[in-house]
Image (tube, rainbow, N blue to C red):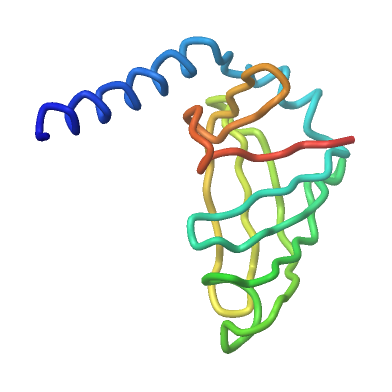
Length: 132
């Protein structure tokens, strides 16, 4: 049984590695051209669905259904907040959002695999959607 579990884990890891190999890291120039005006949909690790638009001036207004950390003061309702986005010198997509209870701030490489985009690694938990 232990060997079967090890094979299943190894198989899952090799699937991610193959998917990562098929993905292409977007360059800084590609991101600077692609991101302005895109509507973003992302579910964070806590399960909160968040949406915003990357405005051409580097600003955004985000909304969340607040299934996790961000949003309402008591964590029970949705909310919205202002923030900024940019592409840093390393070619990473960076956001900063001033939620009511906490500041969200992160940067990640954007990987493109087919018609899908991911934050740092090709993993369903890291998927982010961009639409114009």
